[in-house]
Length: 233
Image: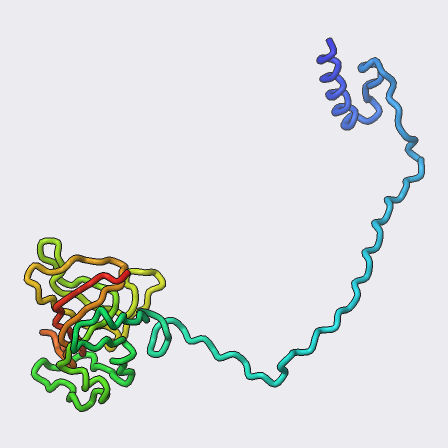
């Protein structure tokens, strides 16, 4: 009967709160006296928490170089002179005789702004408009590093691709400028293997000059007829 007594007490308390003078005798229901502090007993105030200790003031140390210039601003990713992208250096002993290793910095043409659209029969940009250092590379054997962006496949082999300064297909990737990618035509009939997300070294004849597509847009300003395409570790 102990469980029934507990439930009865709970019900009695609920009804007592809502029935005023007609409340039940809770002590009689539970069989035990109910004791507590008198209603008019003084209320003891809560104890206050101790005050936190005061922190001593610390004087800042003077700068060792108060007149030093502020650090240079960091340029945003991408764009000319950003320092991002392929920056590999060539092992000279691995280059063929008469081949020059070049980087995208060597072919930089930041002033170049291609027109949005023009007639196919219109004259292309004069070679004299290109930087002198770039013109010296025209028709020479070069080796250049970059990321492979396939354009044409044949039997799972890449026959033409874009050599990009930046890693493609990345959410932090950067859209290269016209002078930051090279149109590459593979001379081997069977093509070459595809090396995704890996730096490759392309060796072949370098060409300078605008080439338009069938719709009048500039397709490329630099090209390489690739004799060799190698993955770089």
